[in-house]
Length: 179
Image (tube, rainbow, N blue to C red; front, top):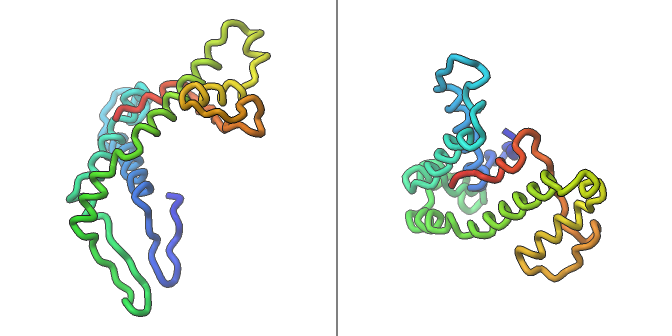
């Protein structure tokens, strides 16, 4: 895992997003460990894309169970006045974390719609010539403008948000994660 390493005075401390990612990747590992297939090419996460992510997303949901969250979370303080200690988060804070789980879900979904629309645009142009002449940054930013009402300059790469990475093998299916 690519987490912050521990120091001489404190352990490696992970924010909740990193722990959710850890649970997600553990879902892939468990999927591979418990898969029983006759063909290696269909083992573990080598399944259709819409199913490949299912065990991992299910394990993400496990993280948000208040009992599991209580077990894997805590407050760690190394201040002189407190000594070096770890204490569990209060139940009220656990409940607030669980309640805030979907706080920014709509923004995340909008980002998914944006990337899916861009992928469809560049994957199915009307002609080869249209693809060759396409200004990818302008199109990427134009979709942002259409979806959000953003009124900034979307015509140039320098003002734009075009940081799209082309996931090999996933294409638009990468953006169809089940929730």
